[in-house]
Image (cartoon, rainbow, N blue to C red; front, top):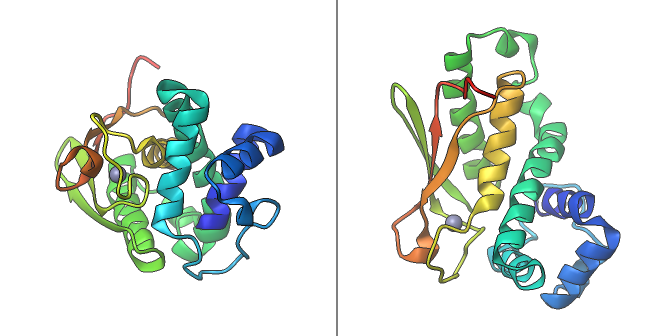
Length: 198
Ligand SMILES: [Zn+2]
C-alpha cells in the first residue's frame, strides 16, 4: 500500500515534486527507493501522516488538501491494478450487478481489504441512502491535530472507487468527522444516489 501511495504521488506531483516532499518531510529513504511490491507493512502510519503535513506546508493548506485528493484518486487506480483481480471486483459477474448492490458489496470488500492488509481499521455502516465509511484507526491523520477534517487522501480513494464501480458517475463524498480534530473516527459519508447534475 505504501508503494501504491508513492507511485500515485509521483504521478500527481511529478518526480521533482515527490522528491521535494520526501526531502521536506525527512523521508529521504523513499526517494527513488519505493517499498517493494509485496504485502509487508513497511510503510508506517506516522510517515503517511507526515507526508500529508508536508503537502500542506509546501503547497499551502488548501493546495495540499487538493493534491491529497488527487493523489487518493490515483491511489485507487494503482490499487485496483494490484488488488482488483484478487478481490473479484473486476469480474464480469460483479460488474453486471445493479448499482446499489455493487456499492454495498464494493464498500464491504474495500473495508475488508484495508482491514486485512493494513493496520487501518474501517467499519462500514450501510443505510438506505448513505454509506458511512468509519475509519476507526486512520493512517492519513495519524497523531495530527487539526481544526477541520484533513483526510482528503481517503476521500479521493473513495471518490475514484465510486466513479469506477458506477461506470463513470459522480457521488457526493464528504469527510464529516476526523480523529485529528478530536472525533472518535474519521467518517466519510457517501450519498448513494449519484449526482444527477454532473
Ligand atoms: Zn483521518
